[in-house]
Image 1: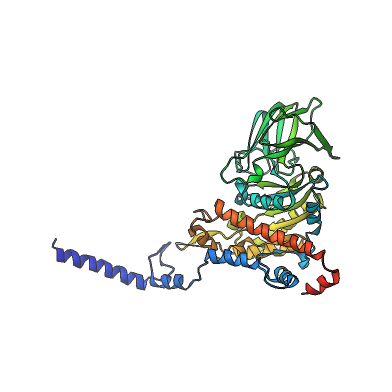
Image 2: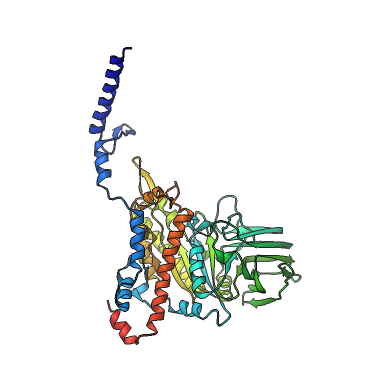
Length: 477
């Protein structure tokens, strides 16, 4: 074939493709049961007209809204009523967290460990988000260590290294076909229970993971939360040559918390257990201050907790001094959220779970965190899942109506179609599944959550310097 003929052929192909580009509708051409799609001029116009989220600008805006620029009380008035990155409070009650802050503030002088329990789906696996909240709270109120975790688990953590040898069997409330269910409902605060039969050893070591925060690399106390022990049940603990004596607390349902305090911070510890018992949690914490527990439940929508024994859970919450419960769910419900009626059913389920926690932990406050933006392929483009904004607003109204606070992660990210840009950001803030944050992205989320909560604390402290009347006048809507 001559060069001229080759040139004419390619020009004809390009001309045909150009005509298709101009003629094909944005949604493609239906051919029976199949829709044929081609790059089109109409789609190019649509994409050009769409407002793309600039992630750096979004995060810069978030940071700027936390900076005090004028009169102190006016700043907090705008924060609690206008800042989209704030924690939304029931009835706009800016005193909502006062009891929690008072407990945290006095924890060290009272030689007390106040606990925050962070439940979530796979978005918080590897201690993501929880570790940033922990770091911020411990910097403010004291504490160290990673909090409670299962004695045996197939879910890794970036904040603690552990192993168990012996007759341990784990039962979980939620999981895939490889997990086992117990023949009872005594699962404890981590939504799992480890049955120990005949004894075993649990080894703990502060994390050396590159993503671990400094505060989890050592710990001062080790705890064992358990129930239904045999008469010969006993535990010995050591770290190097240190062998502290345990302090025991037992609740009405038989739940027992053993706590050992070392004379100094340690990096490792060994628990040697004889006998049999149900083990609900192991803890590595500071001597006093704040502890934050990370409880990831992959694939869960947050509707399972009411099935845990109420007497047992009540004992666990009281013995462990749990004062803030965070529920971070909603993303796993998106595939079934096909209409408003289904979303309303989910609202009812979440309301039931919030009321359950009010029952088992009446001294604690509840904070619900809704889902992030999530990307779905629609006509060849990654866009926000249909009805995700509706689900977010529904969860917000449900939380507030049931005396729980709400933090809007979806809109903090930038709202609709923001996940695509979080994935494209360099460094990437989210993974190629358009659902999960990377370590860098999770840190941005955790830092913003912490800043929002601690801004509430700053106002709690500031109010002590003003008369109640002046604060009420300044904060009047």
